[in-house]
Length: 231
Length: 99
Image (cartoon, rainbow over all chains, first blue to last red; front, side, top):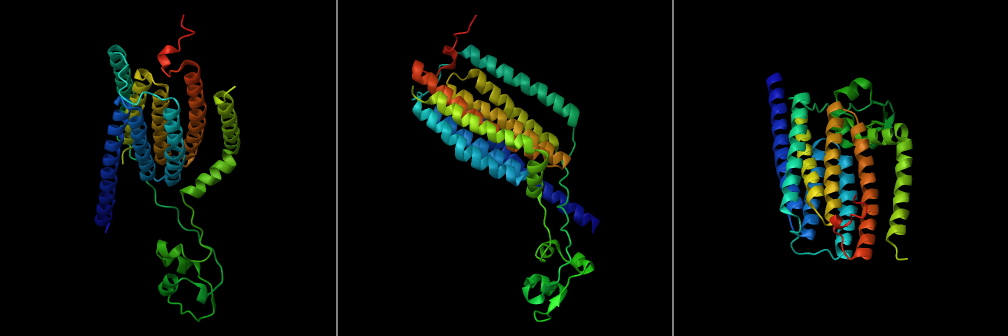
């Protein structure tokens, strides 16, 4: 039992790691192409791949809401802004080799140095610490008398309740015997995922930063219009 | 999964973004490289959020995305203004305050 569980755990981790390796490889190749390609439009399209890959990384980390936001805001809106910027400025669509060789090698040196210092600090500090993906939160039990007819079929079958047995109340002991995927279909059962926690955090603990961000977006909107409009 | 594999990925992405900012002359491409840097930071935030098993990393990542959107809007407006005034978006030509 324990070894089977352990094996399942390992198998799961292997799948995640393979997914991570593929996503990371795509992401890094695209990022490298993005900063080296001479074609401006190609750079924007490589940026799309990088952003999509990082959305995939967010989902891999269990933050599906951040991943969805990334796709909506970055790929949906910011890339379009960039493409408009490229079009409106008639940037040379061909090669952009105007960068001096010296500046290029200095940039590479600075980037490499930054990476080496950060990698050293990270490996020194965090070593081989694992991210523990905890079990999903247990589904809360709510006592609620319901008509047997309204119960979903899987719940009825699991508890041996016939459809015409009138009003029934599922006891806590009965609820505990159900599988999680059946539990969440019991009426009144409360499923709390990551998203509910994010919503709680944004609208209680971080309500002032949230309001400040909305004012910031308005200010940026007005600022962009004022700066870019013709006199 | 190791925490460090995400942090190292983000460090590499950050370094590439810095390389892009330093070597590009086209203003739009410089802004794109800044986005790369912000994205690296976001991966860090979400990875630490998962590591500590709370949602604060996610919340800050969402704030960073919102601020990045505002930054791109204003930044591109400034690039457009520069293009209108100088017919060029080469950032190395903007050296009015050079000593």
